[in-house]
Image 1 (cartoon, rainbow, N blue to C red):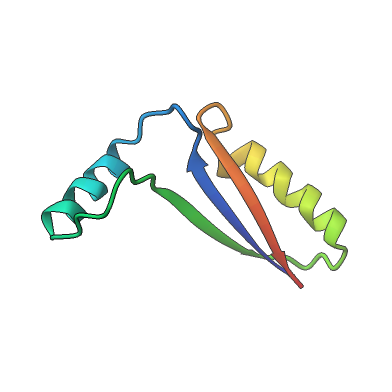
Image 2: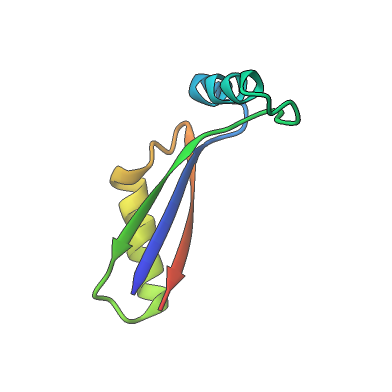
Amino acid sequence: MKARVFVTLKNGVLDPQGKAIGHALNNLGFASVGDVRQGKLIEIELAETDEAKARVEIKEMCEKLLANTVIEKFDIELKV
């Protein structure tokens, strides 16, 4: 089973890298770009075959290591 974890900053947390990306895109002529928020994608291959158990395990990984839950949120996507 494969898991994809999307980690992004929570709303209200300043995102200077997102601001820099948005500014650079505007300077490159992409005038329609508004607010930009950046994050990270983590792909994990799991031996677990039970989707519920895999989701619990990935959630625990996020809370312990993959995301700083004080300022970041995460979304989990599983593919069987």
